[in-house]
Image (tube, rainbow, N blue to C red; front, side, top):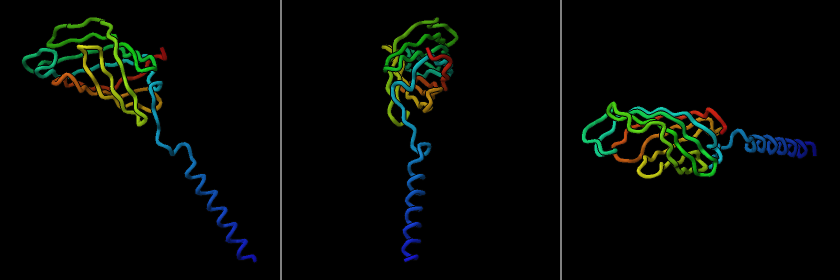
Length: 151
């Protein structure tokens, strides 16, 4: 009888241990949604524009800086200054955008036409994200944007 009691105790101990290890919330994959991005994010992009991006006819250095302001609902706006080939093309311009966020913390940003589009890779805590241009063809920029304000 003692042997059966020992096996039962061992079995219960294993179930509790395995249950604890598999139920540990810190071990679950992080998830994101539209609300993960809410607030003001500072960005700075430098790169090279290749034809036909933004009408350039030869490789052209470019830079942009500004804020992404996310509303937490798939909409937002950029305030951006953009330079191409040494010329300021936009100066503190406001441009609306839409964005998506998937549960795996990837997503996209599309600036209102004729603006660019980006793939984004989001920190699960929403404090930063990496972005890389996907359109227009020839737009060769990427950066990491950091949250600087909840509003």
